[in-house]
Length: 41
Image (tube, rainbow, N blue to C red; front, side):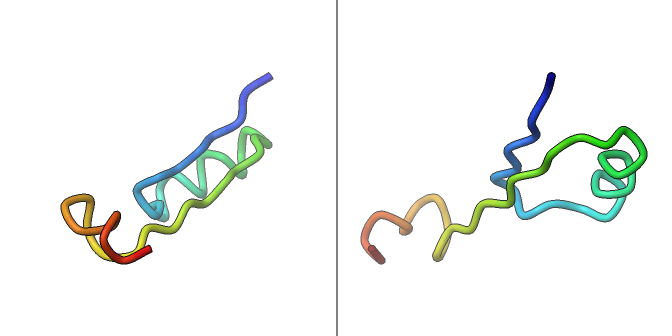
């Protein structure tokens, strides 16, 4: 079994594919950008 852990925020094409395949999906959220996200916690 597979689980998709999407740290990019997703895209509609990926959501459609995951729906067709019936795969679980985890959406991640990051405040800011990778360069400054640690300073915003």
